[in-house]
Amino acid sequence: MSQASPSKAEAILFDLDGTLIDTAPDFIAVLNRQLQAHGRTPLPPERIRASVSQGAKAVVALGFGDRVNTDSQEFEALRQEFLQSYLKHIADETVLFPGMDALLTALEARGTPWGIVTNKHSMFTTPLLRALQLDARCKVTICPDMVTHTKPHPEPMLKAATLLHVRPEACVYVGDHRRDIDAGRNAGMVTVAVSYGYVLEGESAADWEADYLVDSVAELSVLLGI
Image 1 (tube, rainbow, N blue to C red):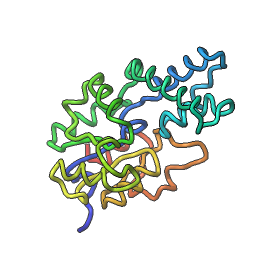
Image 2 (cartoon, rainbow, N blue to C red):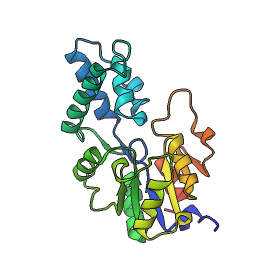
Image 3 (cartoon, rainbow, N blue to C red):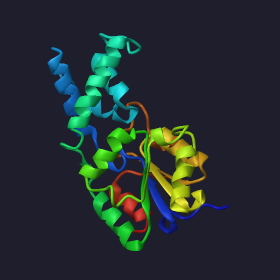
């Protein structure tokens, strides 16, 4: 079946980190505190920010990979230390991207359900959404521990559509990583790449072959007919 126009979509799904919310400030603060605790020099925020979409392992590797083998028990201990600290500071500075609250409010007023499909474990996603008071607004949240296969596999996308009782072709998926666009495409959804997120150094969101590319939340709002 043909895909829906973004402005007529029956549901909007978002990646979490780097798309819906800006989690980088807390990742940056937690890693730099950890580096200092281990007698290491803090890293420039932008270096850490670019690694956030790759998850905690990549962030910790950025800080300690030159000293510790990432397959070692020592590295795993550092990763667990980072995750425990992150959980304690999960919403100290994390916020919705500018303009996103208004976009979500407009979707809600229009009766268009929105949800989240993320590779962030529910152990972190659930308290984060609660802290930002998004848990009651979000109509579906799919985390990697809820599925057998994670993005870029279509399983989490299709599960979200099923729970929303919406055809995948009638959904829009918005993300800031190639795997987001691949997952949305694999599920038959309309895909939107956002360049304002945590695009890896040396990559361009324009190369991911999304159906649409936006550079800001304002542009995304226009695309969605808001």
